[in-house]
Length: 147
Image 1: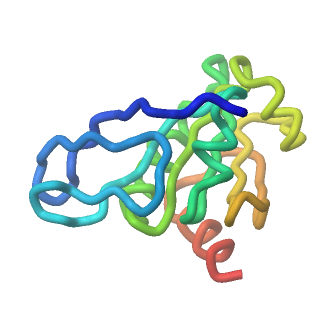
Image 2 (image 1 turned 180 degrees about the vertical axis):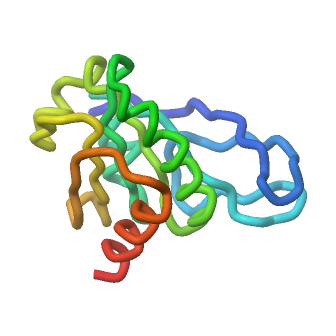
């Protein structure tokens, strides 16, 4: 049985600016304690906790397989953050460093970075490799959510 994920991160509300603790895993959607707006849910996961953090999520998950040495990964990261903020309450962004999570990377047949995967209830509904600007990524995620 995998270890329970109890860690949280602090997310600043894009609506009112208040800092909020957001769990890495859990049911529902994180909301600001001050203004009650949905918060962007952006977390890291690895081999030991990917199932609980990403596959068990009740909302669609965009998985970003990346590496610290990858230039395009550094370029796409702010675009993904923007999409996660725009789609707060509708998606969860899970970042997986392929060098630290080789088993998870193999499971999803990651052959290039960045590779992006959309999961719905733990099942792959879309996958793409390569960086893209935020409008392209937003459309791609939107198509995956609609399909």
